[in-house]
Image (cartoon, rainbow, N blue to C red; front, side, top):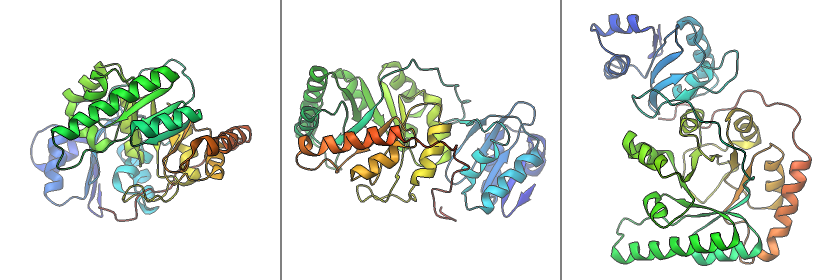
Length: 345
């Protein structure tokens, strides 16, 4: 079936269209090279479909469906404004509403391991220096992320500074019995004894299969960013400590193409992710924390909201977190809304 340059077919049909006998990934690449916007090759027997879209390609593992049923559900999602990668995720959830899994490449997705119950992440401060980290620890925060972005012209002095900052952060968090996640620099974090690391999906993709295996072999707790359904389905395969959903509200911290998730998508993430979810993006005031906490999310990330004096501001945020959890949403959320503008490349 091909409509509006979206090809949805069985493996045999894809081979007929391509005029050759090949595996699904190669067939999909060929069909896209010939002009298809997106290709979905549906396996009605085993539920392992291959998708190749402008935003993501990989094996989609979930409920087995007939080609026509998958196509009807996917086109309905496309009509509602979802990009093809997210429309395929929705199409893979027809009855069970269980989140499918999406592979990072041509290796089949790994089913996530069941994690042992752990402490809640609660208020999660994101800081850019060890000095700021000490401030929020002294105020009482017990989940922190050290986010020091690497400049294009990073030299030996910058790398030495990074080592000092991470080492200090590890020592201070150990003394405070706080949970530390180091953003991006996972090899440095592991070498210096950090217990956790946070990575975006572009960085995880760039690692390749071997790099992701090496990362997981460190045993560090892994936090992963997600902004879309396909990123959520892909993140889940790495058995993360948590998945961040964002941006919940508009944010100036990062220049991103994503639409605000809002509280409805956050609530859907919480119910569907199968792992703890943190809210991030545009969380500046206690009322934001309270509203996010009502969805049942495990943690609420604050970047700028604690201000210059976290000791003075933190009690109001903690009270808001408690109030939100005490007034949790009772109704299960419906389907999510698109997180990219319609027609986004």
